[in-house]
Length: 248
Length: 224
Image (cartoon, rainbow over all chains, first blue to last red; front, side, top):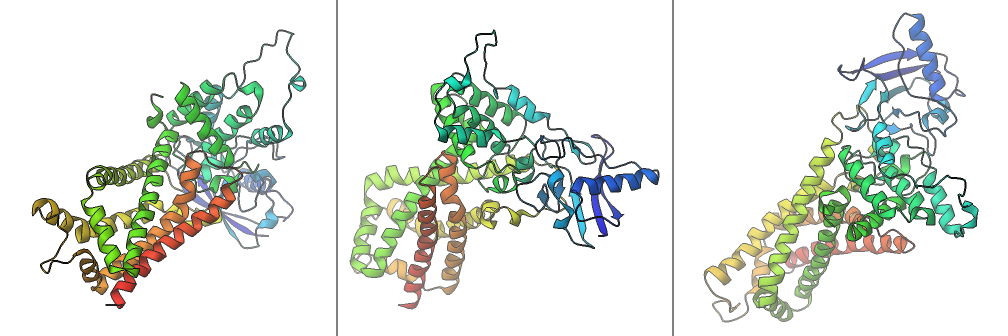
């Protein structure tokens, strides 16, 4: 298929960017979206132009590295997939595809389609962990009884790959689905209880300091999340936060 | 506890609490209005009670006004903060693919309701305050010695322009509630096995109340 691509080009974080049009021909419908981008970059390199910078790593939908706002949706029009797992069969011959970086003040553009997502890492560092003594006498996690329901819900929350699609899709650039998932995966398990109060208070504080917006419960994040993280996690985080505020 | 209302979650929690309060008030207001359809006398009695009871006038009314102001001011604060969270907009954004129009446009439906409230205050609240507290007439009676509330209501709904404005405002109220009802529950952390049932109740509330208000306005416009 032959396509017209409208891509955000930006030299670096200090330079103003703009949308630039490109044509790519003979794209196979079996290609992934990133392979199509590879074809474009090969074309650009061969013609002596700067290739388009975009994030990618595993290309198996599990690392959370790829991003891209494609035709007005995070990770494109397909559901439950990251951009690397989005296939060109989702598009038609002759289509014009708009490709932009995640847009959020807390995710500044580094170059072209690459944004700085270290705000997520700072939120994680503020409390997204449990402190375990690894001196050699660590208790086997399997020795702690956990209900199947809690284990499943914690696992569902833990499938968040931190790609930032929730922030990109949210009209308020809110990071609450990400933080909700990270709070929930510990809040549901006994190992997470010891640091529960500080965890949620510190993570929410860091989230606010990073400049993410307030959740207005549109549900866009849940729909666009490649891992299907549920809004229930935001509600749980809200409960945890209110509980922690009363205690702290 | 300190700092909770300076946090994003705290602000949403406060917004939800004011929303619950306003939704309860709306139900009460609707119930009194509905009485006017069935009985002129009962409506006059209810209006006189609400208009002269010290608890309603000097405790509930100020709380209500503060609640309304808080809900609007907080709505604007949240909207401005959220706008700042995305300094560059998308060239192409397909919001309809993942969320409802109502959820994305609460500020606009809210602004329409605010405009309506200004009209509503000028129509009903200010004349009441003038009669009762400036002219000092708390009798609730007209020159003929009858209760004035019902005839004032009927008189207000004679003007088709006013009725039209009210109908449009209630459509916006419906759109606001269609998202706002469940959103308030989500903000206070209530998302559980009862959510589905609550969604149904919320939809019914969001549709029945505004449609009921529209019915009452049209009823008085056409039946007198």
